[in-house]
Length: 289
Image 1: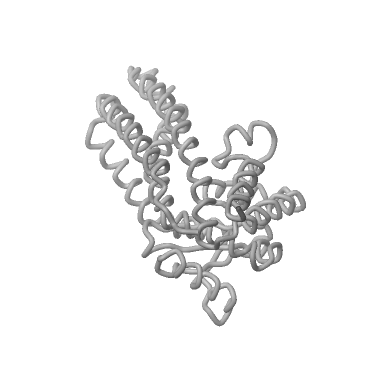
Image 2: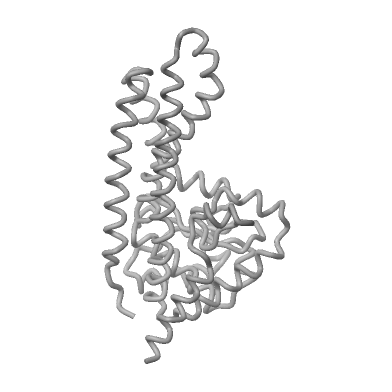
């Protein structure tokens, strides 16, 4: 399949970033009135730089993942290298996480600074074609620069959430001392966080559909990725709950998120696996025709 630019994804990225930027301006303007512009700029600037430049290392660290060399995982490196060529991308760093939770993710602020990580659980779960499909899906994220876009988009939401938490912890004392503006800051932060949360979830779910299409375009095997998604989803039910809880903070990066229950499905960063599989099977049928 020929790789084609996903203009729907690009349009949603532009719209989401524009709306988040507008929220950002209002957010900073109101907070600066109560906290001082210099303090707001310093705090947000430090968090922004840290998240942008170190998000890949933090993601790997949180998963207990480490970079692996070709002599350690020759087949994995060969597969990533071949798929990278097919996707017209520089070969990313390859990492492996020790966890038995079957999953994979890509991280890095640009294609030249990207890392593709798989878990040992994934390597033990999928066959060769299925693993290729998952790796191609992650490379599609890299090609679409999804990691960079989602990192920037989630920055405002993260800061707003932290302001809410700090406000609830320390706002009461300040309010008793005449600092009633902190209550306003808390309410504004809460509204901004909710709106940005909805926008980011909408964009995140669409980018997964786009990465599925991109991964299928790289391998030419939509059915292999569909099979991999079903295999991972089925295997997830047999993973100890303690392991799932430990890794759930990485949901936004995973090829399939760790979630449970009705609430988990509502707030998921990914669309339902069943819908993704259905779309991939439609692509496979179209290719056969």
